[in-house]
Length: 126
Length: 126
Image 1 (cartoon, each protein chain N blue to C red):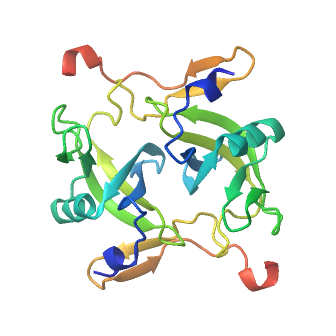
Image 2 (image 1 turned 180 degrees about the vertical axis):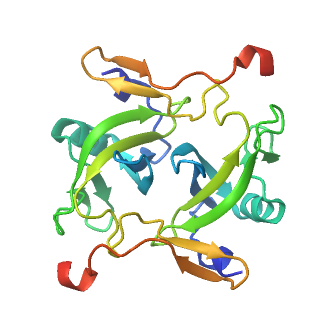
């Protein structure tokens, strides 16, 4: 498979992956995949990552049910990163927001502004 | 500055940064910044990266003029990556496309489909 052959995994065997919402194209999160996680993601059509803390592959949404169904695979121009577009179930962030980038840094207050609506209450899910 | 204090740079002193188009929110590219590159990016309002091949900080667009003006800084929920929204001048990719993710992998043909219009001809710029 050309994609797997051409992607450049780093010295630790990882590649950075932007997970983007297929509905509006915006980033939901960024994760690192090893070859095994990417192969499993492509094979099953659901995003998988290698969790170092658990020592194994995990499907995103395995606990919460908030899975990410693969819609498109886009290597960057140098094959050093990948963008995967997904259909996101419920929300992408464990903090209850669609995206993990729900906070914007505000220089004036030296603090963060919440720039997304919360989709679910993490206390009821985890 | 809270943002710089809270971001978690990895063992090599780098953090992955999604550069997204402020106009439609879509990813343009992904780069790694060290603390110095991020400080310079914030100070000047223009994206800078550390180029290992050159051994120094470089402004994105320094050669081509295709600079990226910072519009927003969004740390992820765990402060392990950053999204920066930018006003992109001309195009983000050195291959002449707005985004570095202009190729989609197609499983049927085991090849890539070009999914963006080319904005400029690299031969006339570099």
